Picture 1: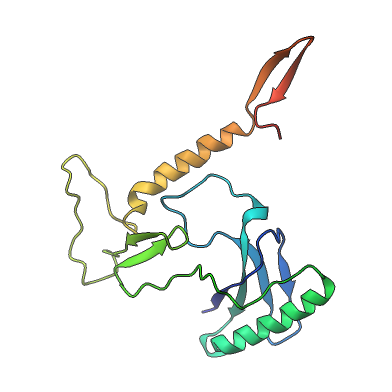
Picture 2: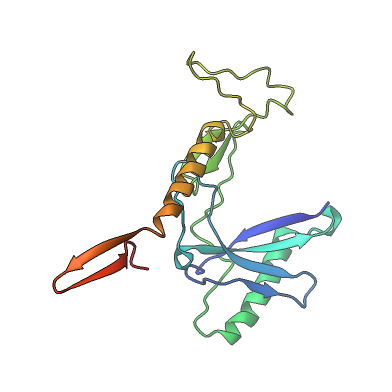
Amino acid sequence: MAIKIRCQLSKTKGLSKILYFYGLDYSVVVHPTIHGEPILTSQAFYYLEHLECVAEVRFENHSDRMSDREIEYLLDNYLFVYSTTDDSSRISTKVTDMKYVVSNNHMYSYYDQGCTEALILDKANDESVIDIETIDSDDNTDFSHWCLIENYSESIIDDYVSQMAKLIDKKAIVKVYPMKIVMDILGK
C-alpha cells in the first residue's frame, strides 16, 4: 500500500500555485494547505494567497520509504533548482514555526493548527473502548466518527459552508443620486 509523507515548508505563504518536481528518485508535489484540520476555527473559504504550502512525497511501498533526512535532502535539491528559476523564492525545509504538532497522548489529537485538542476514540475498531455515551439525556449522538467532536461539528460546518456559499451571489439594488445600479454585495 502506498504512503504519502507531508513535510512542512517555510517561506511559502502566498505561493498560490502547485509545484511538481520530478527527475530524482522520487517526485514531489508542493501545494497550498490548511495546517491541522479545522474544527472550532472553521471558515467557509480560505484565500489562496494566505495559505502556506507543504511538500508531498509518495512511496508506492513501505520498503521504498526514505528516512526523514533523505526526504529533506531530496526536497532541498528540488527547492534549490526552483530557486534558480524564481529569484524571489525563499522556500525552505528549515522550519522554526512548527505547524504539525505531535501528541504524546493517544486519546487526543490536535486540530486548528495545533490550538485545539480533540478526544479521539474509535469504538468500532479499538477493543479497549467499551462504550461511549452522552451525559445529556436529550443528546442522542451516535459516536461513529473516531474524532468525537466531529460527530457534532460536521453537520454544523457543512451547513455553515453551504450558507456562506450562498453569500457569493447576493446582490442589492443601490440607489445613488443621480443613477440606479445593481451591485454585488461582496464587490467581487
